[in-house]
Length: 318
Ligand code: GDD
Image 1 (cartoon, rainbow, N blue to C red):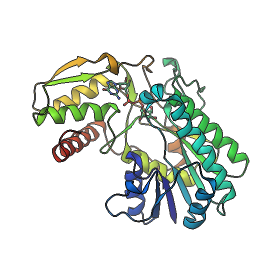
Image 2 (spheres, rainbow, N blue to C red):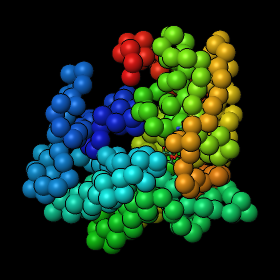
Image 3 (cartoon, helix red, strand yellow):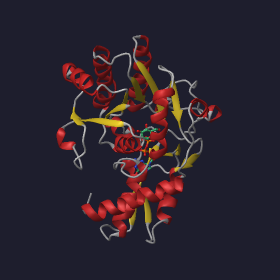
Image 4 (cartoon, protein in one colour):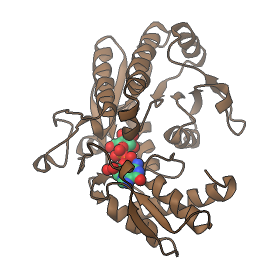
């Protein structure tokens, strides 16, 4: 069994690669450029999503049984500043990639995972929680719109013969996630305070929002199975079903430190529109594959904070 991961050097890609290798699957990964190659990792190919001939060459060379299409602009916040870039990275690139897959030798045989988001649902009234896959798609952010478009592409290309399974992960967090996402932003500040690199003040955004968090290591276990057993053209939520407020995330992380930390609201971190509550239903995926959450939020938060403690210590100011 051979897998190709686009965006293999990203947060999710690295965890997925490690998991697939431990499952004795041969893994190849594409990156934006060869400079991204890390740690002497093998089977890396520099590939963009605009040169069709180059993509077809890669696909015919690797001949994967599964393609995890992770490469994307994944920040909701950034999508407001980079609307066109988000649509290009997430929608146009995917369409270009699917065209290349269709024209390659592996077209109708390969199983493909399309990564959407709970942001596809947009603003959902609390009576409709937990959100299942039948819920109307009313995205409100450029990011959410890009992810609905990826879902539409998955359905369209399914009719054209590709086997694309679309997933809608809710918030996924864990060690290795970049800055710009809430648990990394909070942990990074705590790590700097602990090392005496900054004042004992944390700047935070909206604390009242509630999100349905899962550890990335739980998410990628679901990816590796649903790509094989999901129905092409269908969407599957991946979520815990338990909402946690950002205020509680902050309290838990601060409690893991022995420093006295003051909290201030940073206006630039507040969003013009921010979804107040997400609770997902995972009934569909748990009735399709043998998956359940293994890692609780407290364990994940401890791992994220330790990741940032190590990283700040090694790299100094990040
Ligand atoms: N990033 C960030 N930084 N968010 C903050 C902060 C902060 O300092 N303070 C409060 N927040 C709030 C945001 O306003 C939002 O309500 C919540 O924390 C979560 O923000 P993010 O971690 O940036 O995640 P997101 O919900 O916008 O998007 C994530 O989840 C989607 C699935 O629902 C991303 O992981 C997406 O890629 C994913 O699709």
